Each structure stands twice: as C-alpha cells, then as structure tokens.
Image (tube, rainbow, N blue to C red):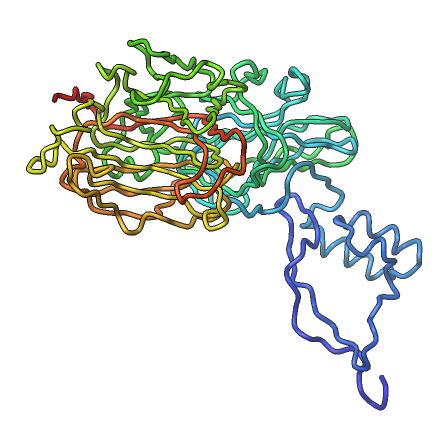
Length: 516
C-alpha cells in the first residue's frame, strides 16, 4: 500500500500458457497481466527466476519446501488439489497443439522421433485430432532400426475411435531407459485431420498397413521431416507401477467400409460424389515404371512436344519421386505414351497427389494429345475438338504466391484453331499455410458439370465446366523453371517431389480410349 492505494493492479490477461503437463493433456491457463502503479516492476519474492517456467509440479515443490515458503496446509492442498494432474509424471514427444494442418494418411503407419531424458514406465499415449474420422492406433517403437530408425515394437494401444481434441489411450506398462524412441500413429481413414508442423523433426512412414507390426517395416518406408501433436506419458523410474492399466471406454465398432486397397480409402468428398474405386495409383514403395520414348509403361518421360529427358531427371529416394527441371525445359511424367499412340486416360473422377513444390510445379490434366489438336482440325463448331485442360495445382516462387496456388480450367488452351481460350476467374486461391517446399495433398473433383479444387482435403474453389471439358485426358506431373505468375526461379534447378498419386472413379468404371 502507498498513500492508502494498492501498488499492484490487475490489468487483464496475456495469452494462455501451459501450466502443467498431465497424464491427460497439457493444462493451459491465461496469464494475469499485473501493472505497478508507480511504474515499478513486480517480482515474486516466493519463486526464484529459474523456477518460474517449470513445466511440472514435482520439480516445483522441493524448491518451495527447501526455502520453507510452503506451509504444511498449503502443501497438503497441492497434493490433494492437484491429484488429478498426474503429479510425478513425465512425457516424451510433442505436447503442443501445432499450427499446421495435415490429413490423408489412412493406412499409413507413421512414426516420429522422440527423446526420453529420464528412465520411466509407459502409462499412456496422446494424439490431437482436428477432424475425427475412422479408427486410430497409437504405439511406441525403439530405435534399433537401420540408422537409428524405428525398430522393435515396445507397446501398442487398442484400436479406438478418435474424437476431436486430445485422445489419450492406455499403453502396456513397459519400463524404458533414457534414449531415443519413435512414437507412431496408424489411422484407417484419410478423413482424419490433425495438426502438424512441416519441416520439423524426423518421421518414417509405411503405406498399406492394417495393423501395428513388429518390427517397423523400415525397408518399405519413406522418411521426411514433420511433427505431429503426439506424446507418451510415463511415471518416473524403471519399474512398472502396481496400478492396473485403466480400461479404455468402450466405443461402438464402426460399420466396415469396403476399400479397393487395404489401408487406403477415398477422401469424404470423393465418396460423396460416388468416386470410391481406386482406378490408378502410385504409392510409396511401388516401382515407378517409366518409359523413355518407349510404349507400354505406366508413366512416360515428358509430353510429346518436349524432348525425352534422361533418368537423371527422375530420382527416387525414401519412397519419394523427385522430378528435376533443367535449363528452360520442363520435366514431366505423363500417363500417355510419348508417341501419343495410347496410355492411361481419364474422364471425370477424383484426382489427388501428396506433393512438395518449388518454382513452377504442376499437377494437371491435359487433352489426349494428338498432333492435329494444334492444327486446322480444331473445329470452332465442335468443342470436343478443342484443347481441354484442368490445372489441379500450379505454383509460383513470387511473394504474391507464398500462400496461394493457381487452380485453373481452360476452355481451349493456347487458343488452338483460332478458338479463344477462357479460364475461370477464381483461379488464384490462398491456402492455410506456405506453399513452396511444403507437403500438401492437392486434389480435384471433376464431374460433367463442374470442377472443385481441394488442398489438404479442404475445398478452396469450384467452377462450372466449359463445353469442351468433358473429354478424355492424361495425368501429368511437372517441374520447370519460372512460375505460373511469371516470377523468376529461386530454386535452381527447380524440383517437384511426389510421395503418392491416386485416381478414384465409380465402381465398374472403364478408362476411355480417345478417338480422333
């Protein structure tokens, strides 16, 4: 008090902080804002500076007791009042709800690295969910795999139905020594959405998994750099406690949905449109069958009007295909043969790819190329002779496109045959995070009446088709210098990276055969 007035005044709140780590989830609390009336700065006389941001109650209490600043009554209050906060527990992994967004990992067993600093006994594992869907299994692996990767399975949860928010499930009580471990999650549905930070940490992912295996299928896995909100809770010490493992709350068994490939399911928007059959796909661990100017291959090096590049432009490592552009020439992978005599074509469907882009990367659908579409056989009176094109994704390294993608439908590309081209006006769209060098799921839903674009399974725009759109197309992946907006390259040479590609069609669908 000074002159009958309090010197310290409450002045609202700061942002929330993590008050303590619990066996359920991190507890967050708004920080009170305190103002000193005469401009001085408030400093607590109770806690030393180095303890004011301690993450656990068990680290805090000895300091208070040693300084004789905690009465017996207050101590008892802390013990009883915080008994629900799983006092004495420790965690390894990512306890924060991350700001990025991820999904589309149905059937993938994904393990992220974590470090345990003190010996402990496993109690539970927690995973944060933004959008619920399908079932989920959590597990822990040791680091005995090649190069310190995930190896032997240590513990696994039961299969459960996740809900939005933190999901904490019990694990078998296994004593762990300090060291490196791998925390894993296995979703059954692409609909499950969850927070992530791309470009942080290390993970291994194995496709086509329907249950948690031991050891981790490292030889069939690919690796990358992403963190998810996933952590394990342990009690201190290397001996399991006598407390029995809690029984998980039973959940109704979901009705099984048939899937064309075990562990891989269509996203909800494809299902709603009736595109539930996996017609064409390239998964991590599958061989990329590429033809270099020869027929009969699943993929073909470059569109017919470009020269055929060498295999050095297509590098596969850790289950990831990297296309590299050279000079001023694009590098493509097409589903049509180089001599345009055949290949794999599509007409409508749901198309998706998990990609990381730089400069002018593209994932697009282009007319079944026949040289006469460029000449006088493009008939102004017949829209089905015009050059149809749907750009699922095109990128640009310029600042204006840092969080934007180009999503375009063309009426008649290059105005072939004298028929003026036209595009959708809403073809540049902002997404939730950075584009360049960041992994996203890019997708498009194509029906006879409209085209709808998705990024990370979130709709970003839709537009009616043109009279020329409903024709057979080939699917193309591209890396090239520059940018769709005309910017100069900032990654030399430019690359496009692809983990997987999928095309969903109706049951019984037959791929079209183009005719002149």
